[in-house]
Image (cartoon, rainbow, N blue to C red):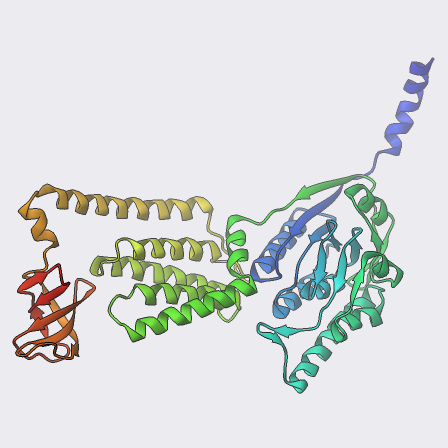
Length: 431
């Protein structure tokens, strides 16, 4: 009897469930708002528009980030034909600072229990903005942005303004009571239930969502975006800037090795990308060019492979960052990138093996001759104080190395010299 009843009701059951698939593109942001985040969101928007997704869901947990990048992402939200939902999740997560500003532009905004949103007062890398006029201008500009976005989404305009003006923070229940968010959800089932039948304004038109037959498609950062996300973190970018500046200063104070200076230049380029001082494509191209300069320098400077490894790092980073802007209409496949890098590594490895075997050919005296600087040519870098009568002391550069040298002859800075003898015990050359 039950079986017969089931067969009779089956057509009506299928008819009731005959809803079109509601495609939801799911993103996860668990870091600062930076150029990598912007690239990730832009790529997801392109995918959503091209493949006909009905909704973009951003699971957000961020301590903040760059205001300029956040404003560019808000523009993406406003221009999108696909509605955007931001969900501050999981428990313990927050949409702080730039995250709160970003959330104000979402067509739908949800939070999990035990999450928070707010504290969006702008600060500098070194702390709070000190100049009153500059601070007031920055705050007023951001207040205008979040309040206009909140007004267009039908949310509490005053409360969103207080996030910027007073650095106010709201817990999930408070945010719901203050009508800052559309609801509290703790799982995807709750999320689907709350958006079904929801009316939103999309580019000035009212749209009713129908999510009865949802299909979630997870969209992850690619390797290049993950790498950029690491270097574009504001804190790390600031540290890279300090390290780069310090190493270049060291190179200028004690010239000759070029290793410290090379590392410093790479660090500064990465910091420039992180601060968005360098446009991403220009920074990426700079890293690639710098990589090949480092490969050439390895030929003339004894760095024991440090410059080569640094060059490979710069080449990989630059290749991953290239064509990451919204106006880039080209894309380089990972196969081509890693294939090219593998070819370079094989070539460098083959050259290293060739030199290694060449050095191993001779034993005894031949081996000693290779490492002995006697007969090698160098250049006078600087003149040192005399330490004993009849001898003149210099700092010389030979094969990329700096040595202390002494001579009976008088030389000037920049003169070429020939090493007569090497005292390995006292680490001094006779020229």
